[in-house]
Length: 279
Ligand SMILES: C[S@@+](CC[C@H](N)C(=O)[O-])C[C@H]1O[C@@H](n2cnc3c(N)ncnc32)[C@H](O)[C@@H]1O
Image 1 (cartoon, rainbow, N blue to C red):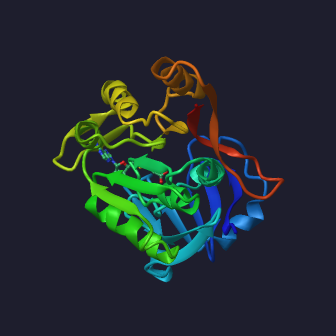
Image 2 (image 1 turned 90 degrees about the vertical axis):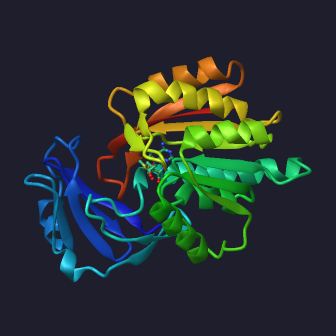
């Protein structure tokens, strides 16, 4: 089931439907003309960064609502930064993760172990759980981990084996290597700029090579995949692919753009990049 759709884009904005709510938000890469100007009046709320961060119509929205996006149900809510608790460009990846883990599971004696790093509101963690994997969800923000746990509840996965970790990714991985914990599938979506649990500065151009080396250190001896995504300018599909190929020689790599997509006649909107290594 999917209740997300990109309805239109253009003039630096995107019009998206999330369940019963339609939102009009900034989208710098949509430099073309909107295709359906008449549709934009249907927006329930509008977000702008022109003169500081500002929502218009937010008072008419519920404090939170639910939407099922590629079979994962999420609690959504407008944050002051314009985020909602989901990055819908990752939804095709969720379906891939569920399918890949579910396909690999019957061939193993033990359930597969899936690690989601920089895991935000947990869409990918829950996709992994739906694929039958035992999951580990890591994010430095306590509030986001709480939000992800609420999402697990909405999906009936409260009792599924998911470890919920509030920690800095590099510190967590260093400890996991020492503890001997290993994972068959790993996803990482490093931010351009972020802060660890103790306020540690994370800048992708300096920290990513260390993170990737640590990721290799927690990969099981029967790995399934490593999935790397990015929203940082300059981190093109080929850049991510080169990083994974160098880290994990052998296997297969694939890469591409993450896209916001909707109805057939809507332009897809590039919204980040991905590369995956498959053993
Ligand atoms: C862009 S979001 C990731 C989006 C998510 N992967 C998704 O697609 O839904 C970045 C996340 O990384 C977390 N983060 C930033 N720096 C971190 C760090 N050093 N260690 C752990 N988490 C961090 C933030 O709290 C935030 O939830």
